[in-house]
Image 1 (cartoon, helix red, strand yellow):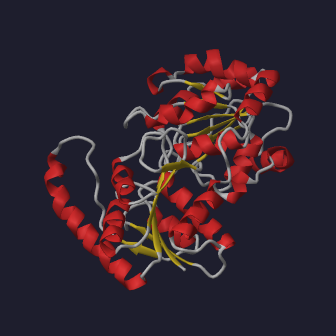
Image 2 (cartoon, helix red, strand yellow):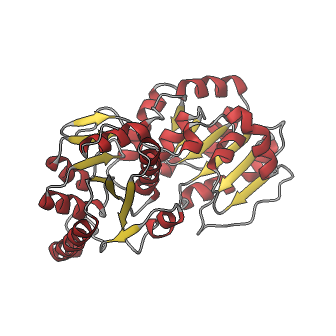
Length: 359
């Protein structure tokens, strides 16, 4: 069987794509997986690095509101659809699966034109424009969160990497702290703004370095590759890294995490039972706050608006949390497995069934 997986533009689309590709290979040895993306974005590096062939379509940004780019959209979309049709005619996939974003729109249109079975996976609580379109063309629609408003939706969760879905944080704790030069006897806050980092999180946490040190709290700060900075010298370990490729170790080293609330981050940190302070991205359609709602309602996390994340707020809320082992344990237990971690195989089975293979 040949599968075409379409997704790109951000780690929020490419990470579940890669997790699903690996699950397809586990469930159906000999399967041929090809990916669809753009030359300009993150998928152009990480998908080939993972060992999968990558075909390219032109980038088609979808404006959220009327602007000058709106007039260019029809021509761009036609060009991308033509490119997707050429790829489908050449590869002849048995099924196409899209993960949303501007890469998926031409794939959805081309699959419909060629009558190729289509599967749509929506990563966020609030569906994007691309998947609202794709869901009109198929009955095979999967969502990461319950209650997402798409026709024919089946809640499966968000596919995540096996290194995370099978993670035993306690078993890796000693190795993780040794890897990052952290002490075993003091609490650790992990800070991450996602694959590209978040300048507002970085400013607030760096501005709190002295307060963390005075409280005996260690910091593992993943700043993002374009925000690399020297770690403050406070006498208490503060590790600043531009990028971490072993998030299993980062999660295992931490007692809590301060992070954005993209769907991938929410799924991973709650799935491994890591108490979280979520700081939703202040732009978009509000999906990041909704992504974290179930975890917060269950007691597994806190939420603070981006504009309110200041050193003062951190001193009043984050540092006391890190100094309270019982509260951390309660929050971790509330978060653990609240969101399913087997979505990679559930989605892979949906794709195989849509293509006429029941394994």
